[in-house]
Image (cartoon, rainbow, N blue to C red):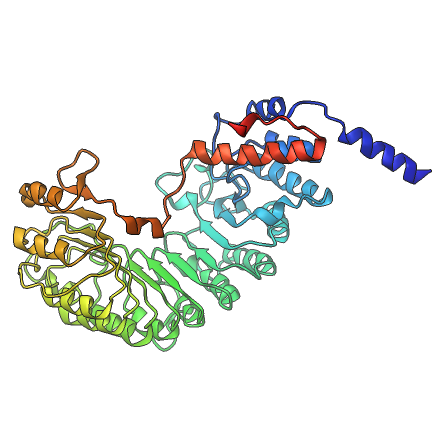
Length: 488
């Protein structure tokens, strides 16, 4: 009898109630701001009604589950409802929690007080995050931020105490360590860690790094400096934790640090290294740091040494820059380099390009900005795989130099030239380049080789249309619809 009832109920559920086209239009009305990357929680809730509604809502989700809690609606009410829906989806067998790739932790939510000076630990928020981590079994990335320590703090968080100014022995720091240890139990597949601005030890970052060291492949941080702890062998606890990340493939930091010279040998699998503002915290051993990269990181594919300082530095500031010799050594020891970006380096010479062209035959992207030491037309190298070339504010270059560069790169598809070489327009047109963005300094050239690489993101409308087709096709197949609306 029960089997007959279940079959009857399944038959009733399989009968069409609303045409798929009407159903998808109804779901669109629940979106936050039209067709947005973040579907509202109302859409998520409606998708849990039945399989048909779930299929209709599928292409509207976008990045809804990719990062939680949503940076658009980062408050406890949103967090609690999102968590409840994830919990319900698990009960129904949909498992939306499996789609969560990134978890964004705002440390100020752990403060339950309304005072600017007192800190009251919010145990309920810890419990919510612990449940979220337990549901996100495919979690890839953990991002820690402290909006109380940011100039862009939201009004909702403006009264929260700033927990970025903690002594590691403070009671609040102990609570923070407890919180990290609890969520680390669920981070078995986490490969990316993004740390907040400020002193890492104040955030107990060494606990996170140690707990994730076996799986971590990418770390992004503002600095690895610490003012609290005593160093051990010249390294503080956070820096010691970094030496245990032997599977690290990518390291990005805003400011340079002398300790990197001792840490880099622990990263033999490193493929990307980036310092975003090396002039703001110059270190005397930056040459030795680059030599260590060349010696210990032969798999390096992407190297960025960036600076927002002006093109012309004061006398003596060159001592704060990597020398041409150190950069040449790095280029000679890293034959897999595909992406190079260097800004504001007056020490860089043409010999670096010669070594780079000889060693890194697979180089595809070369970005040089404010490198005033490049001034010769004796460029006797070839760039068989170079696709993009930027020479912005390299003010000592002449026409012959750029001509040789273009001739040596048969697959070059994009070039940005210095402003003083605007009269190269006719030459570039003759080489098949076209002006882009209405700028006489940026040019692109289309070629058959581009068909080999399709890394451009599709237009939003095309992507949505594709998902819409798949969703409606699934509905028609399961419910017996045979109309071919998209056959055109």
